[in-house]
Image (cartoon, rainbow, N blue to C red):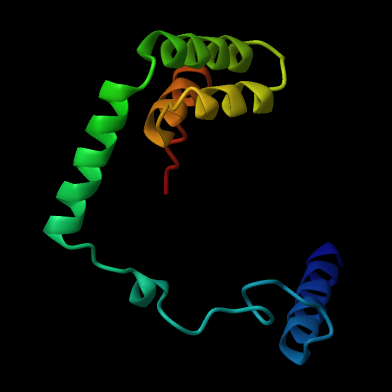
Amino acid sequence: WVQDQIQNVAFERQREIETGERVIVGVNEYTVDEDPKEDIEEVSEAEQRRQRERVQRLREERDSEAAEAALAALRDAAEGSENVMPHIVDAVKAYATTGEICDAMRDAFGEHRGGI
């Protein structure tokens, strides 16, 4: 009797999915037809070099002590229970780079390594 109930419910659920009565996001609704990799834009070597030079110039011209202090405060806030957003804003105002801000967050939170 239990096996029959399981089979009947499974059959009914599958019918609901196939008719659209039951919506499963990514299965029968809101699916993506195109390959998302098609939208990846290639950046030329020259543009990459210019961007590296801009970041290097930024690091040379900014107040490094202020940037490091803001990043340390961000890291400390992230390791605790404090709201990190004001510290992110302070780091941006101190001209910390996106990579440096992300590194500070990674130091505190770690990095997700999803398995298959």
